[in-house]
Image: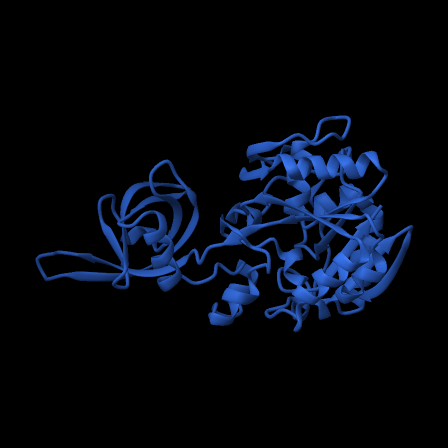
Length: 348
């Protein structure tokens, strides 16, 4: 299975830099029963069945992008350098992070982010560095809200800088558990009126947590994709969520993951018979064609990067040839791609 099998041509103008407004006005490509139909996210109450279960990721994105200064004393006076930091994940002490330019830093030096937050460089390595901040707990969270910016994906950040609007746009309406440095983007299409309409339709919601890491944007660098090593992310499926999913399956109702993060988590928590158990820990599950789905009946997801692990996941769900048809239709019909783009509902 070659990396080139998951490549396609994507015109740059189809990369969305802002979301649809309102959220549920985004387009929705419905692929079900062999057909492809153009709809809107707001049509979901007409598309889904009473009793369908939507699995939602309730992770909350932190403003993980920081701009600070490092001051170093020298014989010629203090030398100051601007440092850009992106937090990756909590460490046993402090945070793992990326910094640019790394060559401007040494272990033991302090980076100041405005007046409310600073961090000492505790370790440095090829994969980044570990920072220990001068605040923890609620004080750290408050300072981060003050000085941080939302960590937009590289393909958006290369086109424009994050701004205040992204604090709302790049967060789901049900975000509850802080810890992600990237959003579960399929969930960004839901707003309060849509949730109310779905509930009135008889659709059930189940909340799980997967803290999306920056590794979700890492490119696949091996030609034989089966040798790719996935990044690990922390997740939790509570007992109530597991019971709700198992009950739906026992009653013949569909379990539809909203986003690849929710899908990867419930597949990690399921046994070979499709029974989901409470789960807490890290998962590095890698889903590519040939994978046997244990619990997922459908997936709502945005349109993904060529040659990405997420392209491999949707190819596993729908079949590589069908995904080529779906993406060909999306490109030809002008669907908007990636985190702020349009959505698809994939039901094999």
